Image (cartoon, rainbow, N blue to C red; front, side, top):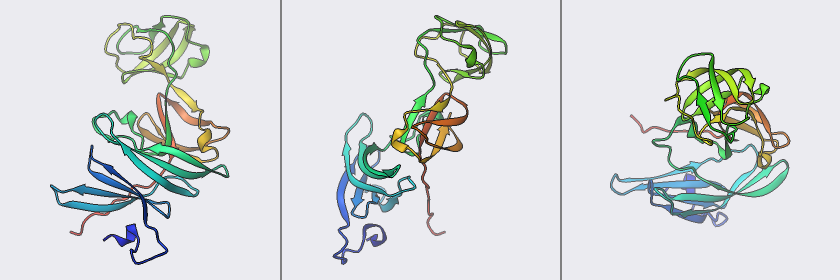
Length: 255
C-alpha cells in the first residue's frame, strides 16, 4: 500500500524505510525516515478506521535529508526528534531538530510553523514596571531601575498580551506611551514579566545565507535573508519566530 510514498517493495535498489518511530500521545502516528532522505508519517486510529500515509516536506531551499528519527515521552505529548542533513552556506551539516507540540489552547504568538527555527522574545529588562493607567494615551510607565534610553521611542512594551507604544522618553526610569491593548491594573509588573519589542534578531548562524519566513506577534511578515547570523525585521515585535518555510498541502476526499 502507498507505494507512491513508501516505495516499490519489488525494487531491490530502493532500501525504503531506514528508521521508524512510534508516537502514542497526542495522536497515534508512526514516523518513517526513508533512504532518499524524505520523511513519511502514518496516522493510525483503530477506533476511527484511519490508516493513512503522507509525505512530510521539510523546509529549505537546498539539499535536505532526514537521517534518523526517534520519539521520547514528554509531559502531555510524545516528542519526536530528527537528525536532518542540511547544506547551509555551502557546508553540509547534521542538525538535531524536533517537532513542536500540537498547537492547541495556545496563544497565536506561540505558533511555530517554520522549520529549523528559533523563537525570540523581546528584550526583558531586570526591573519592575508600573503603568500610570490601564488605558489611554500619554501614559507614564515607571521602571524600578534605570532601564530606558532615548532610542526606545517607537518600541512596544508588552506584558501578558497588554501593549503600549512608547511615544517619548522622560528619563532612564520613565517613558510616556500610548496603550494599544489595555493593561489589567496599575499594579507593578514583576521583573521578567514584561518586555520591550525588537526589530532585529541575531543567533541565526545555523541558517546563514538562507531566506527565512518570519512569524512575528502571531502574523506573517516579509521574508528576510540571514547575513552574519542576523536579520533586520520590517517593524517592532515582541515575539518573533524565524525559520525555513514549507508548503502545507491538503487533498480532500472525492465528493
